[in-house]
Image 1 (tube, one colour):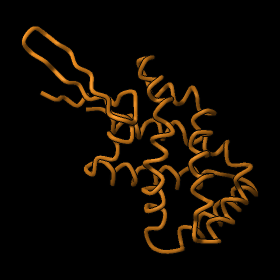
Image 2 (image 1 turned 60 degrees about the vertical axis):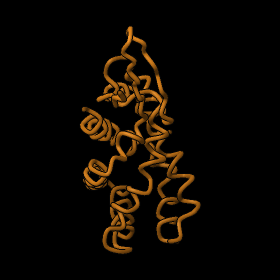
Image 3 (image 1 turned 135 degrees about the horizontal axis):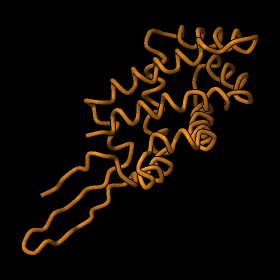
Length: 175
């Protein structure tokens, strides 16, 4: 009998762990974040929540940087209807894979969401490594230029989003 654990576990690649209990043999499948949150039933909700989070972080950014960021974000979102959700959906598997080791460490502490928050700098670096790799393949020069314009100053904004992202992940990884 195979059981998927309610809480997302340690690795991206499914691991099969076999426990022998007398005549009963139970197989436990450990899933990574990517496996648990790419479930089609959850994926659209995760993407929608991530878009809302990004909208909130951008909207709350103040000063000259905020004005520039808001203008660039509006330009990117205006490329075509649904561009932001499609971009997030495209980044989701690699982002979850990048976060999986940190999340797994957090599982060991008993509160993976709080662990991501406590390690927001490391979490932001993991996410930015994904977007850095992805931006090189972006077809739109508007997207590439907007990203490159704000990349050097983006880490604090990503760190600011970590609590919301941790909550989103936590919400959808619970059984």
